[in-house]
Image (tube, rainbow, N blue to C red; front, side, top):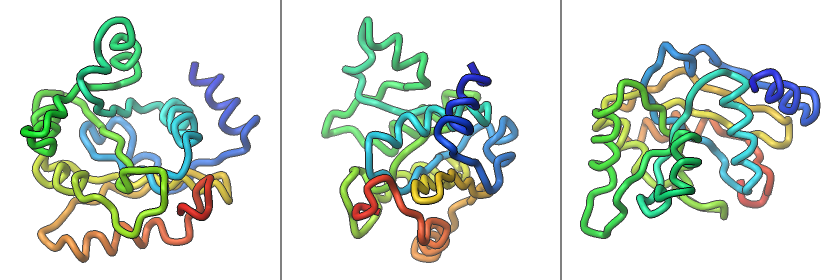
Amino acid sequence: MQWLAKFIYFKLFGWKVTGNVDASKNSIKKAVVIAVPHTSWHDFYIGILLRTVIGIKINFVGKKELFVFPLGLFFRAMGGAPINRQSNENKVEAIVEIFKSKEEFRMAMAPEGTRKRVEEWRTGFYYIAKEAQVPIIMVAFDFEHKENRISKPFYPTDNKEEDFKIMHNFFKGIKGKVTEYS
């Protein structure tokens, strides 16, 4: 399947991968992978192609109701992990428990929390990385240049404001599929 994904990603779609591709390889067994900007449903298939092209398993979490038969089989095969999204459960803690229970888990998230334009990112991904003691790997979805740029692993510090400046700078100038939402 990797040859087919490479053909589609590189030849048919004309995309490229730059940055620290090795940081996302199997040497990093656990990480929070943030994909920015998230402006369109097109991000999904580009992300699926990207993870296949670079040969790395990327996971996601979804509400447990999605993981019942028969769709549950598909979501698990795609790297999904169920989470209880009841209002009384701390989602950060629940996801940290998933990290602790797995030998290998790289969870993709969109810090915007929506495909619409936002002024501020949600912070759950940051606290998940801190609590699980895993790095954040930033992946830019630059539709203007048809490029996925991958960062070196970034370990959150105790200075959230400075950490967010570093992360925002990585994505500076990146344009998503729907540019006005970037």
